[in-house]
Amino acid sequence: MTITQRQLVAPGSILALACLIFTGACERERRMVRTRPPAISERAQLPEAPDFSAAQVVARYPDGSYSVSGLQAAVPDLIDERVQVKGFVSEIKICDPEQDDNCTLPPHAFIVDDLSRDRRPLMVIGGKYSPVTDFKVGRGETLEGKVRQVSPDGLFVSARGLLLLDDGEPPPEAQE
Image (cartoon, rainbow, N blue to C red; front, side, top):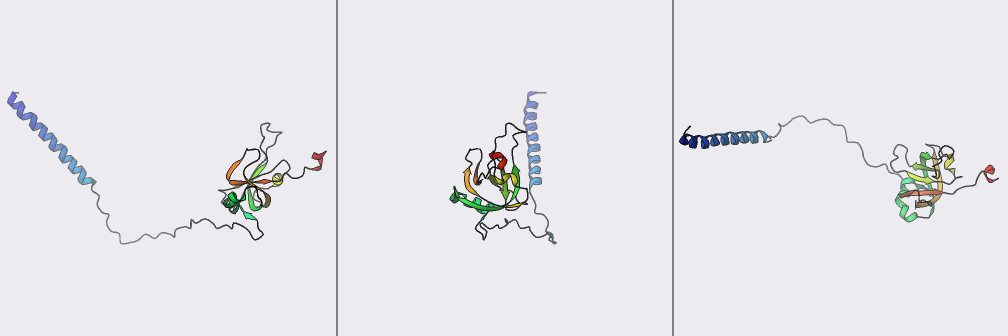
C-alpha cells in the first residue's frame, strides 16, 4: 500500500466506523422512546380497599382505669403516680433460680389491649411475692401499680412506661 492509499483509507475507515456507531446509537434511541400504551376500554373490577385505620381504644374506662394504650399515651404526666390498668396478659417471664443460677430478673409480664394486635405491650414488673406469678396468658387483668419509665433496679427501661406492682405479702411458709 502506498502513502496516498493509506492517506485515503485511514480517514475513510474512520468515517465508515463513525457512521456505523452513530446510526446504531440513533437506532437504540429510537427503540428506547416510550410510546403510550393503547387505551383500554374495560376497567378492572377491584375489591374495595381495606380499612387500615387503627382500632379505636378508649384511653380510660368508666371505672377510671386506663387502657394500655391510654396509659402509654399519658406516661409523661403519670410518672410515680398510682394507677389502675386493664389489659390482657400476652406474655409472662418468671425466672426459676433452681434451673438457672444466672437469672436475676424480677418476675414480669406484658399486657395489651387486644391480643390480636399486641405490637405495643406494657411491661408489668412484680416483686418476689407479686401477683405476676399467678397470671395466665390470654386472661384479662385489672392491675394497680406505680407508673415509671425505669425500674428501681435499672434493669428495665421503657419510654412507653412500666407498671410496678406492689410486692405483696409473702406466703405463711416463707415468713417462718
